[in-house]
Image (tube, rainbow, N blue to C red; front, side, top):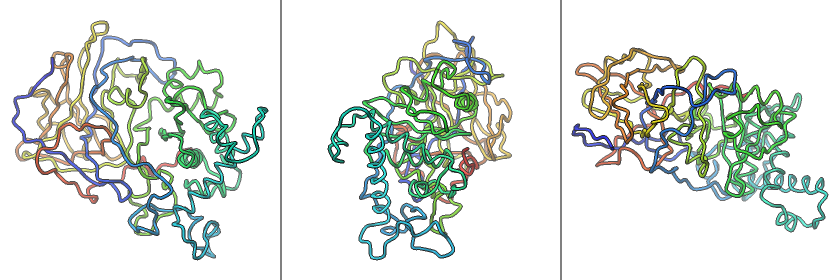
Length: 476
């Protein structure tokens, strides 16, 4: 039975533009809902984990926000100074910087973006030809015929293995993750992943980046399913399974190297918002940008989704099993709504403004729910007792100040099992009279939004967005 609240609130959508690279987005309260169960569903295969929870509390009625695909005709920095940034290679030559000018041609009628696109298109052709040359099957020699003869899997394999050859070339790291800069030098995993992402975009293959706290990889779409492409030296991408299928038990995947298993083992408990759902070029991160954009949020990391019960069906439609790893030291827990995105805003909450989070729970007769906790991310110094938290209209008891995440802290509220029966739930938070603080909001790539917009939206300006230190870490 769905729960309702007796609170009379004129709900309004909160919107904002996290950077000049991203369209205006709806924002969601960074509130994580942790639900505790009686026991683990299965033991964990990983040394850093306590156990596995499987197929719990999947949220219905949501979809990914649609954004226009990047094409050769997408706007470039020379068309719109507020648009995307470009590679060092496409900039006019600078005698003091040998990375510039390699793609620049005076009086070139193309935009810089089109110059970069065409350069990557040449490398897509090189990747296919290399694959073709090593393939014992008889094929024609003509480029267009060859391209038509390669099946989807072969294209994915050709691009993944081609990108891997640019990984960790000694003495050639240009410290830019733009694909064109990588193609003139080399990169660690962040740049190699951006290269594969760029090549796949130009080739018309569905692709998405997966960024954990310690590694960056890519998934490519092949015939309606996702296949995982790692870029560590010694591996053979792509793997004929998704990232999450591999991560469920990497020790069972015979083709993984010891180093791949090490990274997978570490990433489970430490990743946050790994699936980059940005509509603009992720490959702009760590690349060149106009001076007035340096050090801001405008360099490419953006809309993203964590893997949790709310997003599982959207990230991997059609799967029947969704396994969630629980960190060592935790009780049997499923995190229903993980904090998402690198972009985030701090918005003042006082007694006149209320925020909410909507989530679903499922019937769990075989492994009953024993309770839960809501963690609301807020500015340093905020206290749980400064706010009034309710679940389905019933006040929740503060559980103190919890863990910190970079420069933010979690305001913890305990949830009794009696409030977590199967159905849709509404968590609300407002400041007590005379108190308050800054709460964290982030762009929400899921649709439809809860709440639906009623009247004029609350508008959050770009100045409200804070730099999250996780986006400044270089992935190795």
